[in-house]
Length: 144
Image 1 (cartoon, rainbow, N blue to C red):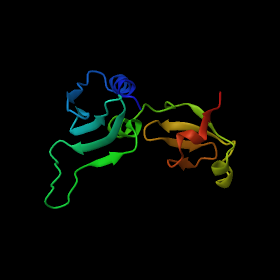
Image 2 (image 1 turned 45 degrees about the vertical axis):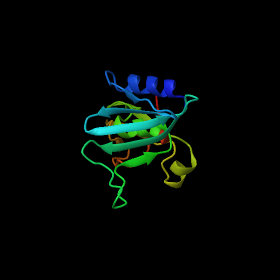
Image 3 (image 1 turned 90 degrees about the vertical axis):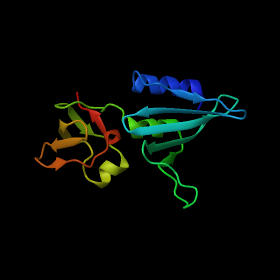
């Protein structure tokens, strides 16, 4: 992922965030703080962002004890979603239908209708009266 597109994505998701850059001879280190989380990554000289990392602001790695604070992510979107989750796909009161895919067929829910009781985290009330709070948004579609 190019660093310029990643920075645009951050500023769109978290308005007003300040991104700091520590320049280096080989690659630059960028970071920002959101709440008590510090997110950082390296920018190679070709403009590619790599090595995405998140930790608490008061947690630091200790080289003497083999303790590495925080966690690493494969890409910038995963890092950003861990700090500022994307908005929910459905709002409360929406009528949704379970898609006709392998998972919904296995659970015998394909084609059934439900009402969204809570958007984040997703909680559904099926038309047969049962409540579900373990279905993924990607398995649902708007019914109307």
